[in-house]
Image 1 (cartoon, rainbow, N blue to C red):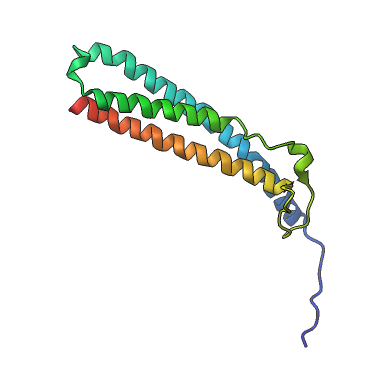
Image 2 (tube, rainbow, N blue to C red):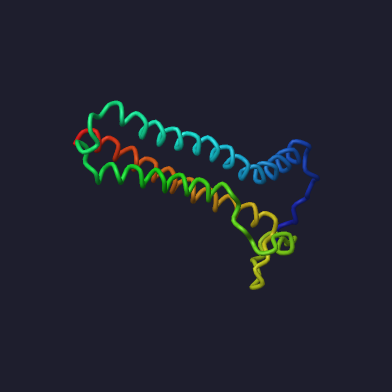
Length: 151
């Protein structure tokens, strides 16, 4: 049989890292919010500039392929909607009543109660999904801009 290991209290550096990791986990939602603000401004500026400048550079809208133009505007509007939807937190039924303290490794019960870390992780996952979908939609809109102007 092996002898039990001797434990020592964690060092100040380890305690600092644990505290910073906890802070970082709670800040990930805030970082997504900052990114959403920037993304929303870019999307809105691109859509506005495209619609306004299209009139100056194209003699007639009838010269453009209508479906590419339509797809561009639709994808950019979808990106704006996804950005707005992702920016606002998903409503969790009675969030404060559902956040409970639980030991590490315990799974969520059928009652749907979140641990604090599960709550922050769930919010970050929600925001990450919508930012990815918004970016994909925005890039598809850019692709259709190129198709609109070349065909």
